[in-house]
Image (cartoon, rainbow, N blue to C red):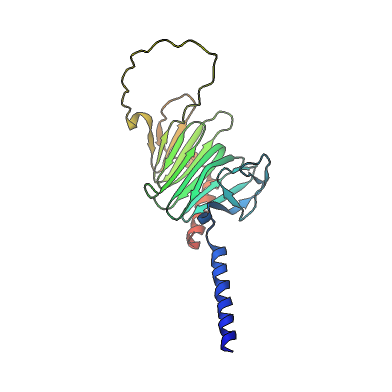
Length: 250
C-alpha cells in the first residue's frame, strides 16, 4: 500500500508539473498568444504566402502577418502587462518578436489601419524594447497606452497617446535604387559631420496629446487630444479589455 501510495503521489506530482508546463505563458517560448478575437481575422505565418483563419489562443510568432476585415479585432498578449490590439480593416506584421527570461524585444509594422498598445509597466532599459513602424513615422515606446491610425491611401498617421509618452522619429529612408554604371570622380574633401540634436529629429508626444504625420510634411505638430480624436467605441473596448486583463493578472 505504501508503494502504491507513493506511486499515486508521484503520478499526481507529474500531472501537476505537466499542467504547470502547459499553462506556462506562451511568450516564454518566443511566441505571443491571441487572447481575444472577433472575425474576420487572418494570419499569414512566416515563410508562407497564404492567409489562414486566425483563432482564439493561436500563437503568433516573429515574421507573422495579421489582417482584419470590417468588424474584426485581434488582441495579442505579448507578455504580462504587455498587449497590442489590431482594429478592424487593418494589416500589420511582426518583424521582431523575441522573448526570453532576461529580454523582451518587439517590433511592430503597421501597414495600414488601427492598433492599440498597452504597456502597463515601464520597459526595463537594455532588456526590453517596443517599437512601432508606420509608413510615415517610427514610434519608440517606454511604457504607455496609445493608439495608432495609419490611412491606407494617404499614408497619413495619427498617434494618440492616452497615458505615458511616445518618442517619434522619421521612418528610415528607402534603400538606394541601383542605377547605370558611371565614372566616379577623384577623391574630394568632405565636410565634417554636423551634429544633429534630438529635438531636430524627434518629437515626444505625451499624455492626452496627438501628432499627425504626413508624407513629406516634416516634423509634426503636437496638439491636445480631444474626445473626437479617438473612435469612442474602439477606445472603450480597449480600456475595458485592459481592466479585464488586470483582474486576471495578465
